[in-house]
Amino acid sequence: MTVMSWLRLTISLWLIRKTAKAAGWLLLVLLALALWPLTVVTAAGYRAASMRGWPPARLYRAAAASLLVTAGWVAAAAVRPQVWRAAALVLPRTWAHSWHHLAALTIVRVFLLAAPAAIPAGLALAGGLWSWRNYAISAGIGGRMASAPVTFDARQWRRQARAAQGRTAAPGTVPLLARGGRIPVGGTIRAVACKWRPVLTVPASACGRHMVIIGATGAGKTNLMMRLWAGWFTAALDAHYAGTGDRPLLVVLDCKGGRDARRKADRTRRLLYGAGARRVAIWPDEARLSLWDLPPRDLAVLLYQMVETGEGNAAYYADLLYAVTVLAVTAPGGPPWSAASFLERLDPAWLQGAWGDGTHPGEASRVRSAARHIGDIQLRYATLLGRLGPALDGPGTLDDADAWYFILGAPRGAVHSCGDGRAPPPGRRSGLVKLEAA
Image (cartoon, rainbow, N blue to C red):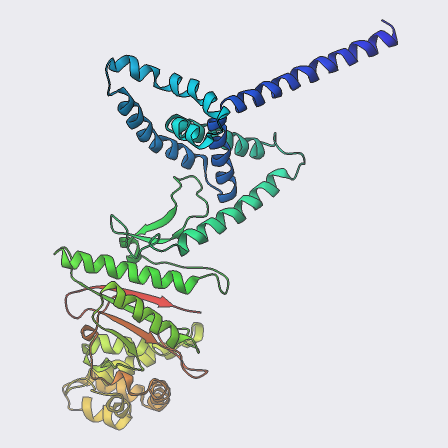
């Protein structure tokens, strides 16, 4: 074989391949033009899925739902003599008449006539094409450059995030509580290894477990927490009215404080009022609680937890602090009734007089052993209780409101306990304690 014959063969094979490819594209174009109602629906569905970041399953579900219209259309066309023959000829007759309508420029009428068949078929075809596009890009067989998968994924993420924001902002799309006692959180951006749904929901029972919300400043952590609080309260209140649960009690501990704490408290109150709360108390601005109404042993533990004791070598001081606190709270004659009463008891002479009656030798011995440290302990508690102010001296109990918003922010250096996440015991209430930190 000469060089010229080899070149002619190569060029001929190239022309044959290009001609076959061009013929295939031409046939596809002619078919798309011939089935133009189907082409319009397919293009619209594919474009919508691409711009909104939909998964292919959403197009398939839309196609399945539109089959109801197709079934109704066929049934309506078949209600005439020769039922089965008419039902079988509905689609061919519509298609045969469409070309005459096109000549008369009645495009809208043609599309309406073909819509019952074109819409489900077009959406299903768009779902298949969109699924292939995603597979081709992820598998590396689509796109012109090696970076095509990364570029495609980043573009789809932006579009999915924009679509999710739109769904969240749409009125009625994300209510406080959905069916089945689930709390709508917001629009779904992307689902991985699970079924995609337009709105992400969590069961209200999940709020009874420990949760951590992590995000940058301005990412919406506070808004998400408020939505979870209101959703849980709505679900618990519905259960109470249905006779399957106690009346809810929501306790929010805002350990961050700061300038916007009051604004967040007011937003939370307005949201909970909309959810059905009778009263939302904001501590310490508008309501007070009596810390001293707790049982003596619980009161001693709580007072001990309110003071930072440190770790390591400080364990000795922690034991000493707890022992003196228990002695002051459980002294004969009853527990203290106010902060001033408690501070008065943190005195070696007072404790020795309370326990030195001869009937409590063990407690009296512990008072003598800790006598030289009691003054330091009193100073710690005086500083802490002074910064807290009179808001824990009552009057008031947690049962006075359906929800409490505690603002624990204080001057620099203040030490506060944010609790251990346990719901308060008094009364029959379905309790939820949530903590907001920095």
